[in-house]
Image (cartoon, rainbow, N blue to C red; front, top):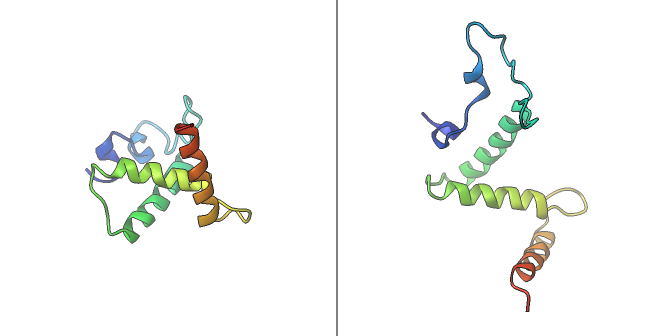
Length: 100
């Protein structure tokens, strides 16, 4: 078992059985998550991990946290990663966690 399955996540492909139509759970009825969006996001993460030459199971959650933080808080005006924006937001978040 590889990929995200070893961490307890289920691939949408494994939900399909002989008696159900393929991709019946295209949108999760509980969370509203789209399986294609999740798989697309995971492919972006895998691409980043390949650039890093992989990671360990213990480090993966931290790398996922960083990936999501950079995507959320590291984007500049042109909606691309901007180191200055990321650094400014990092300082702001640290200041929020450790007020004087």
